[in-house]
Length: 92
Image (cartoon, rainbow, N blue to C red):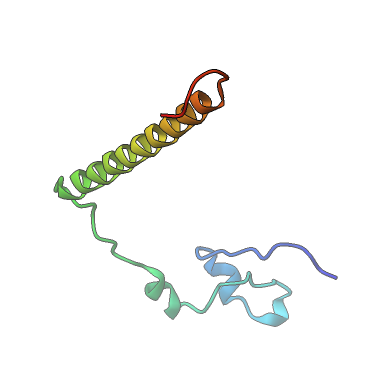
């Protein structure tokens, strides 16, 4: 049972181009010379507008407001139960 990790190398052109009879073992994920140009990507730069950041801020402030309301609701119910359980006091 071979549990060794697979080595992925996209920059080792010498092993990928060597013939099988040379004894060099090509690494997993390597291909011939023509494939190197296909691996190259021109990724777009990050967005410079602040609208997305404002949206995230609004989202997290909304989450915190919902959490605060839930905490206050639970605390109110706990106080009501504690008052009802006290001897000598009537329920509100």
